[in-house]
Length: 80
Image 1 (cartoon, helix red, strand yellow):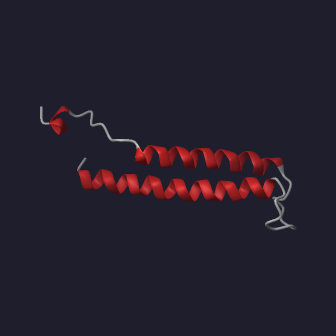
Image 2: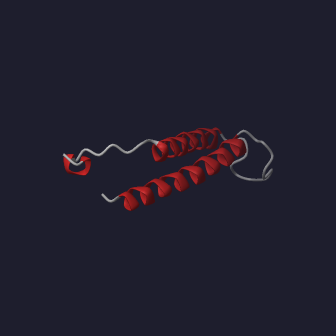
Image 3: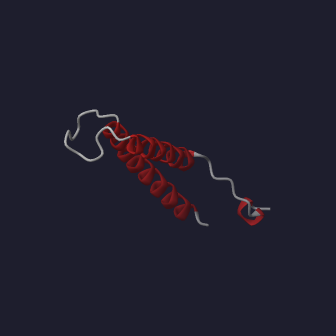
């Protein structure tokens, strides 16, 4: 995989991670009845606390993965 392609994949992972973490945080806070939308069906529901927390964790994982140095498994990529 070319360097430009790897950078594109990492930017995509970073972008998706940020969006997923933010959306998950809103879901979790809504489930905790933080008052974003008082009359929402999500308000005070444990399901949204759990799903939101999982989304935040997956989003943070994507962010971490996008920042992790890429190690090639192909010996040709290392000049050997």
